[in-house]
Image (cartoon, rainbow, N blue to C red; front, top):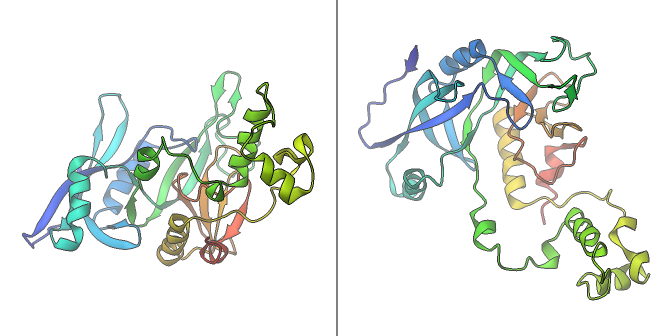
Length: 287
């Protein structure tokens, strides 16, 4: 069964997107088929975003079964064919923009191992129990929000052969580099980090290694993360975001926990597992 709205204006570019499916995702969650069918109807007419700009709309949806046996929602969407949107339209045509993330809330999350839906079981999504991987089944959707194109890190892929300036490194990246360097015969000798270790930490060689550094300082938020924080705050009316300690799931929440909305795990990469932070802190913490 499909659902649709009519777009009267002829000056729209129309395209297809795959909203979501019944596969287990990277957060170790999956939509049930009944949930998918309800979501299909709820997404008709919802706007799509590129950054903070709402420029597309879903016209119709249908639930289909893929060649891999998994069910998915195929949506037909439109974007106004005006100069401001030409770049996005070309990226859609070329396939650069095809992945989307969705925001929705569900009433029921069921553990695949024990069937608990209260959230009180001790099974951790992603871990194995008697040879079976734990994941959460999502059912009974209560609301859907605007969908958005997932940003493709084209700049990083294009410049992979160019060294990243040390000023752009996060402490986590420095620590990982240090670990790799210390596993080589040269250890700290010749390491491009060494002069900074010695200069800023007043120690020499191994004693200045990042393993001794304090990594608890606030993370450095990128411009994209600040933009995402503004969008989440405005569209979902959430106050904070938190990343699960296990499975890397990302959730937007209200301060009183009355609202809990699953987000794409690709958002806010600077947020550490188990950490919760307000959106205002992210918006005010860009460098």
